[in-house]
Length: 249
Image (spheres, rainbow, N blue to C red):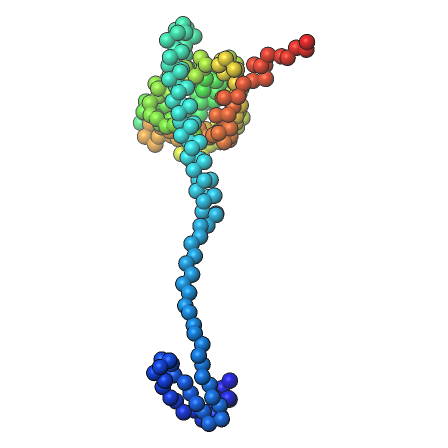
């Protein structure tokens, strides 16, 4: 194209009628009379991944809300149940063991760890029978559903939860020591005394954070190795022996 235009002689002429510029060379006449129209294309789209991602992100939030409602409902139910059960069945015995301390009043770490292991033997999760001297009074207790502070509230919740169980089994599988905390890995199963006799089974671990000044447990954080909604489904699912057997006839 560059060679064609360089070898040709062009005489420009402006034609006002058609409002376009035409060129008339000596040997070549080019009269472009093309009409061009400009189209504006507006594209609007939505990334399907963003929508699916938002739905995925909302699922854990919904699970948290549902699980929190279930947790507070069970706490309220445990409190209500305690009013109808005899005191001997509701109130858990307290392990009034005073742990050894050093000269500055700090509780011995080995004594705290031993008391926690002993509490597992007493299934303190469902009995509330735990060594109170191993914990701060304002200790924080957290699990996948809630978080609160107060040793007495935790003890009461454990005791009331135990009153809702028909059978239970809890075992400490492994213990790990770290600089600022200890981790107890456990396995738990129970049959709730609801009319549909649901079976709750899970494994997990609890982090016991030690206070630098007192040496006692200042944070008690539970982690369940089961998705939150699975736990909720276990609570709502009737056991196999709940449904009456079909008889032929």
